[in-house]
Image (cartoon, rainbow, N blue to C red; front, side):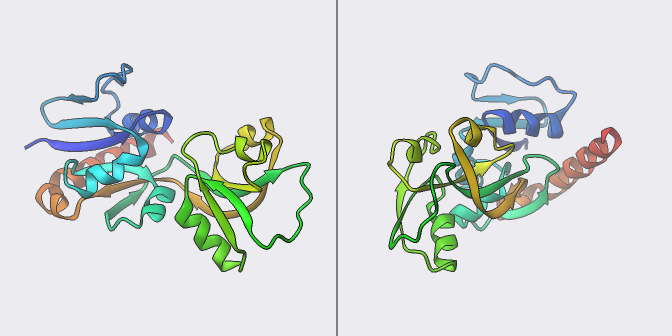
Length: 204
């Protein structure tokens, strides 16, 4: 039976593909939602859906971010931290904004659970404004006081007049598996991990 792998669309997905399947050519047409050969089937899904596909057993393994795993609290088998997808979850505000104590802070974010956990840890009351688009816009138009979001280089924050206020966590790509499906495909999954780890080490 073929191994089914869920990968996130976008830049992380392309890097994940190259890590797992090089030299199998990357299928650049993302309108095609799955590709396969004689041994593996790859599903292209929205990044937020990778965890659901693996959790429900529609995919045996998948690649997602550590931040997403912690946000959802999903009990997936975390097989391996991968050497890419490095970023940080931070709080950020307008550079022109002078930090002042507020009884309740308006926080725009795609990560409501991680944001709540962080602000509870520093005893700051907040109102969460859940957004799925470009959260950097929220402080600019006065929708929020701060944002909680993932940053890699910080260039998007800078372009929108924002600066990092504090760091919540470091994240990176994670290879995860469905517990039951892992037991069924253990040999194939471990062979894939060993082969790709060795191949990456040789090119590093």
